[in-house]
Image (cartoon, rainbow, N blue to C red):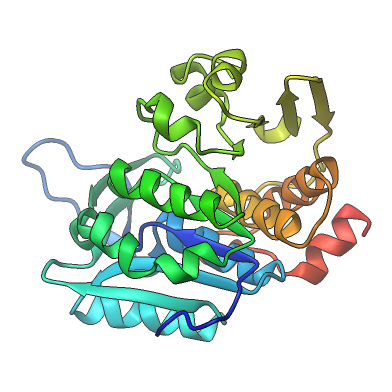
Length: 296
């Protein structure tokens, strides 16, 4: 697809994985083979999860990613189409990203992620989609692709007038030049600690820090002070994808002109809803569901 003159509420730049999940009684030790009881394949990758989350939350959404020319790539691309996400896919000479996951009877897991095509999402891919990024209302990135590509995408979005959001997961050391391009950063408590705390992020040029606190809601930190967003009490079944649901809903709300506190409240509602269902993409809530819980 090409960008043309279309403007999107949210443009997500990030990873796409196919998750291969085996259910076992217990995790194998070194050199050991165990028999599994179930096997499933799910769409995954923080980029794809957040793009679908934004689309379900009501945003006109585009997604820039890299896939391999393989069955997994075809599967993920079909999902993007089915979810109404405008997909700007670069096919590369590498396997589509995979996550190999074993889950035992006590819900403990072991995970091996093979980034594959995601490692090929470099500056060249970003530049090829400059038109899409420059017309976005919000640009949303994570850290499962090369950092130079993240910085390039944020820079193009910022230059075009977009609000830029960075979900700093998985945690990584971030340069000041990258942080200066971020309007809103959304770390969890662990990631916040590794990034030096909210004050350090604000001093580096970030405008807003939204800390996700799990069952304790969210905290908005700016130079003007802090605002606590109370949690929505739900019966949690599986927190997989809850953070991605929150990021997608936050980006959607900001892209549609909702104020910061209101957007964070919708994000908290989306994350809570996702925790009530199993899986990542299957758990992501719709706009109507978020409206009901958030009281819109």
